Length: 97
Image (cartoon, rainbow, N blue to C red; front, top):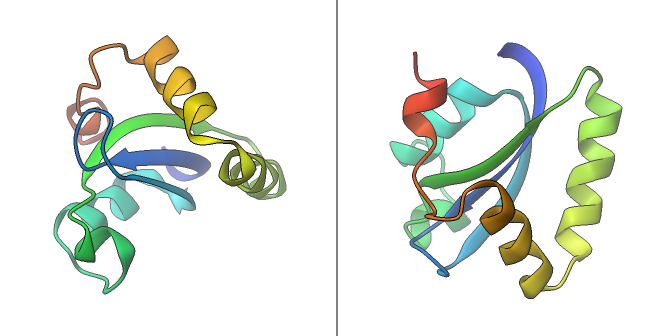
């Protein structure tokens, strides 16, 4: 997973504030969000729960997907999360190992 492009969605809580990001190192980036290492939106609004992610083979594909997801309306984003993670569990334990 380290060095593999990924798109991810963080949430403050179930149906809470959402954040969509892209990274080349999902484990490291989510850890940075959770620890409030970087100033910004996720720190300001306490958006730390990983509720969705997709892995890619190429960064270009990940960036393209991130841009598309950011244009989606909120209902579509929530549906995407709930299709894959109906209980909005924090997926951090899955990737932290």
